[in-house]
Every structure is written in C-alpha cells, then in structure tokens.
Image (cartoon, rainbow over all chains, first blue to last red; front, side, top):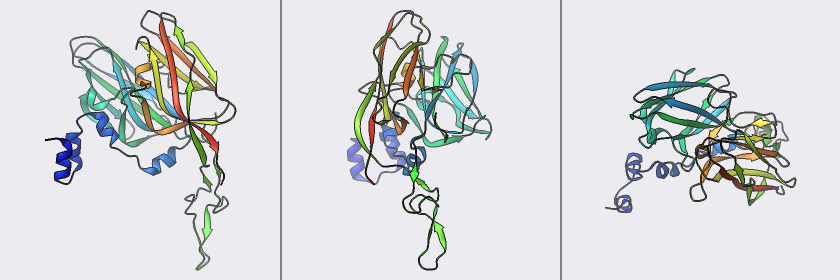
Length: 159
Length: 166
C-alpha cells in the first residue's frame, strides 16, 4: 500500500504521518512554523554554536558551551568522520531539562547542512546558560566531528 | 544587525488605541502594544556570492570578503556551497560581528562547511531568514583541514528588499 492510499482511506494522525514520512527531512518539511515566531525573529541575527568533539572508541565525552546572548535555539546539524555514527544528547543546565533527554542515534538528533534538523519549537536560552552536548562513540574507531546548533539572538542594538 | 522598525501607523507609537464605545484604552491590535511594526518590502530573488577561492593546504583563516551593494538590504534564506573537500572550517563575519561562537577550545576556527551549508539541490534552508543591512562587509574565514588545496565558493540565497509604499 502506498502512503497516498493510506491517507485517502482514513484520517491521518500525527503518529501515522511520522510512520509514513520515514526520513527526517520529510518529517521536518511537514512542520509549518507558527507565524508568531516568524514575526518575533524578523530581522534578528542568526548565530551558530559549534561543539567540536573527539571521542575514543566506546567512550562518552561531554562538551559544555556558554550561550553568549539571549537566544532561541532553532536547529541542530552534525558532521563526523565515520559512517557508523554516534549517539548524542543535549542538556540545558539552568533549567535542569534536557533538550534531547536520552542518548539517541545521530540520525535522530542531528541533521546536516543539507537537511538541518529543526527543533519542533524554538527553545529559549539566556545569556550565560550552559549547554552540554554529550557524545557517545558506539563504534570501534576514534570519532572526530562537530555538532552545531543554530540560534536566533534576541538583540536590539545594531552591529 | 536587527532590521529597523517603523512606528505603528494605527497607534502612532503609543501602543494603545481608544475604545470608541467607552473611551478606555486598549492594546493596539496592529502592533500588539509595542508601538512599532515591521516595515513592508518588495522582495526580489537575489544571491550573494562569495568569490571562488582556493584555500591553500592547511591554511588557517583564509579571508574571503565582499561588500553588499548600497542600494538595498538583503534577506537570507538559504546557504549553499561547493568545496573540494568537506574537511573545511568556516567563520562568517558581518561587519565586525562574528556570527559563529568560536570562544570554546576546539572551535576557534568555526563550523564545518557541511554543518553550515548545503548544495543547490539540498540547500541549508532555514524557516526564519536573517537580515543583512546594505553596505555590510561580509567576510568568510576558511580553514583547511584536508592537507590539500580546497576550492570553496559560498552563496547566500534570498531576497533583496526594496521599501514598498505604505
């Protein structure tokens, strides 16, 4: 059965839609942002926060970074030297709340430059907040790479 | 770098308007009480293309710069790039502001090109554009990690903004 047959046959619920839209790109393409965010972010600068990582086989490392300005996190991308991938989680220290609560495979947590993974809703962080990225190398080879979060800064003053 | 706002035409910047029935004040429905609204623009497709540059093997922070034309502001939606090798780090700088957080150890030379830019087929498209004022000096600092010459060209795709009437 094709996806379109399923859609025509019965009402589509979010879980069903996620099932049929098997790739992350297809899923994120379905997400139409709330117009209020577009209004809120209009004309504000985008900043990229990189977390470079270098993890030995079967090890887990944590990397912290301080947010430099009040911002909203909007997307996650990642790049590494191996196809086996890795697992990652992302922790927001101040709110004791994990943006990505448990370790999950790379393909579920991060996108790429070509397919950025957009967080379901922009996530608010303040200046001075610490964001910790934990990377678990699940392969038997050294892992070198970088995880990047894109943010929109809430600044009023011009450059 | 925020886009300049203009005074709300409904409340003249006061953020409130009078209720005609009883004369009481209520929050302006046009600007939601802020007193300012986003200006209206006509948008025309426009690409900002950095000059094609060969980054020497293992060169650190090779600068690539150009100036945005003085006629219009730019709104960027997509980032695309071609490169010889993906072992390439970049830092974007607009005027004097570095747009990548490079203060933590290991990240001094910026973001991997494949974490930041896509291709024409699969561009790094964002849902919320960013705004570049006219006359801005755009600089890209490229660092090669591949150990061989790396030819890079980056294009920022979006719209030129021309003020619309009203």
